[in-house]
Image 1 (spheres, rainbow over the protein chains, first blue to last red):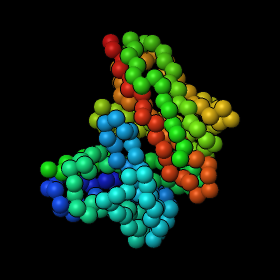
Image 2: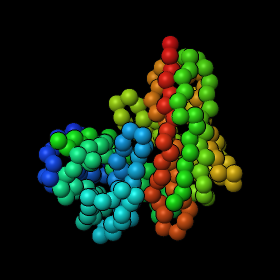
Image 3: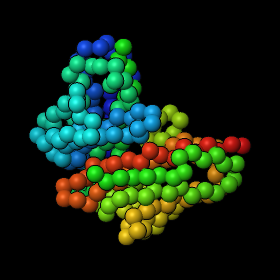
Length: 113
Length: 111
């Protein structure tokens, strides 16, 4: 069965370190997204990609970057982790160029100390 | 950007009761999805419903795109229905496929 997987599931890191969260999907979807979920804010879009070598900023992109070198993967990098980036991160993918159903990974809980 | 409002924010039900959750959105959409976030944090797809009505067991959903709202119905609720229900939409603007989420309805079903 096709799926979308995130790793690691949990991570603790120190302020100032670079951190990369992995997202891998086997749906062969063109569209991939990263969201963060915080109490009181719901899910907010960080970055998204509509295909290989395409990346776009979302609502809360400061301090994050992504790259898309193939269809399956969209890694999210925190250049210099800050305590404000403590959150649960979700990756998602969707198929069609016109709003196909999106599927989410299990989430990564990141704590910055 | 598109605005998504969900109501009510919190809901407590006795097991066996029925409920209706509402999602209002501010612009035309090409995608509307309902998700259930379970107590373990997993986002589970319930419905992909940019328009029309769908049913899946005790759950059903209706989207009236022209009036910019969607409803999620839960019948004969069970304790396993507890969690947060999210509505998410993608605007039908050109090149806009990313979902915008509402803040959710937290449902607690008590025995």
